[in-house]
Image 1 (cartoon, one colour):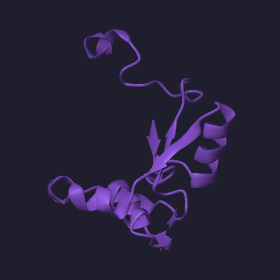
Image 2: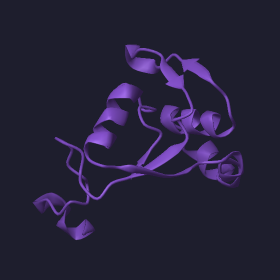
Image 3: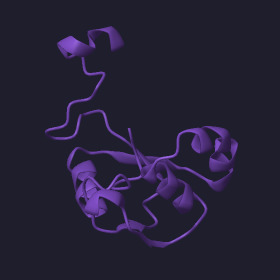
Image 4: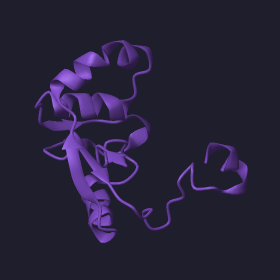
Length: 107
């Protein structure tokens, strides 16, 4: 599952969307403003740049946001609040729950 393609600034949104399409991922929903408001307590306790961008996208905001650590500005677009699902892992990405020896207790 991927929430907010590119919202963490590790890869550009367009690259994440391309990878999602490459593995046959589909959009299964969107985070809505009401969803964000129901999680206000959690988001205020553990805010992240990525979760703030998803929340902004869920509220319908558009634009771009400067990120820490010198990353290029990240867009808030129609894709920012999307939830994507795939049966296959993304190329070169290891899931923390994929059964690797150090994570066997998670599977």
